[in-house]
Amino acid sequence: MTRQQVNAAVAAVRGHHKGPFPEVAIILGSGLGQFGDDMEVETVIPYEEISGFPVSTVAGHAGRLLVGKLGPTPLVAMQGRMHLYEGYPAELLALPIRTLRELGVKILIITNAAGSLREDMGPASLMIIDDHINFSGQNPLTGENDDYFGPRFFDMTEAYDAELRGELAKSAEAVGVAIHRGVYIQAAGPNFETPAEVRAFAQWGADAVGMSTVPECLVARHCGLRVVGLSVITNLAAGLAGQELTHTETMEEADKASADLRRLLGAFIAGL
Ligand code: HPA
Image (cartoon, rainbow, N blue to C red; front, side):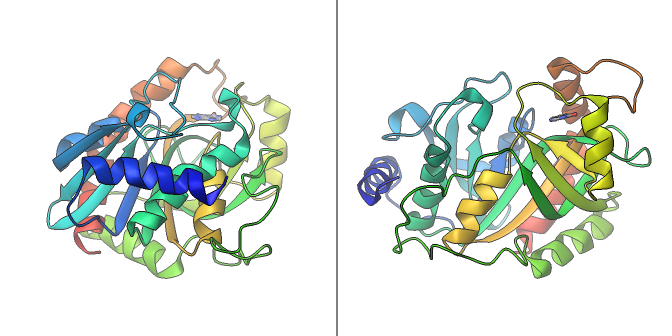
């Protein structure tokens, strides 16, 4: 991921949106794209029009950047994201995050759809991500390091910002949305897990499993963004529910949680 590639993407965004750029960004996960309806959108930029941006191939991922406001807060939303399982080189997942950083973003809110590893955290629950486990086998920062973006070796002790997690929990309480907290583990996908994998992940201390988020968090922390993450639980993970998993079910349950999610994020983002 060269600086020239990032600069080209920045120039493309600037070509569409000339005004001040928001300091808060949100990545909308599978089935969470309707959140964009709550925004007062000033500029819509399809990923195809941003130089080098990988275009998501997954149903439920629109593939465009929305620049505008949510309530009083300037906000940029990535409506759709790329996943490692789509076959993009891992380093390409650095491009959107570094582009946002160069445009002035300071806080990154990452959302995803995830399977629960806990019986007490059922479908349509929301979980604040306290920490993660990278079990994807890949890292977007593999390869030559560009010190301009961040150091070769960097700390992940507080990958998810403690203050922002606290604020997110307070916002949940304020709007009366039940919230869980836990550890997210990223599997490579594209298959859902086997029951044996699910049992292993739970023993490692994970609470939810999904196929995204970790690469974005890594790139964001490397270049100094503050990160906060929220999982929408769409199903009990394989073997816990006694039924097979489908992407359609994932999308339907994400839909059910969407009212809570919108209320929670509305309150949280208004306070940033
Ligand atoms: N596993 C992995 N990713 C997911 C799941 C799951 O059970 N549900 C939604 N995304």
